[in-house]
Length: 110
Image (cartoon, rainbow, N blue to C red; front, side):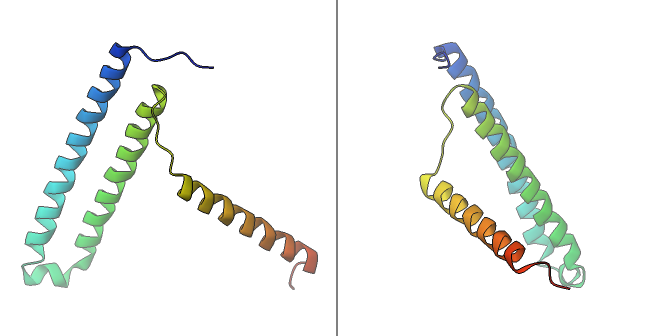
């Protein structure tokens, strides 16, 4: 069993998560404002790939934030787990394993 985190370790983890989330939220806010302003111009509709790039950037910021904040919370024993999401993921894995078994049973299609 892992040791209980100290108050100092918890404060440090919360401070890091606050710092990371504020930075990520500021970046996302700026990107969204720029994308919305761009969409108020004809150029925004002639070059939709620019909006797609903004959305990809936001996606990357969100994924990094989730990984970092979640990892920091896990380090001090405070990670969140969604039981429903976990059950859906397990069901998906079971369905995929069954589909793979069915394909093996039938043989590889030619």
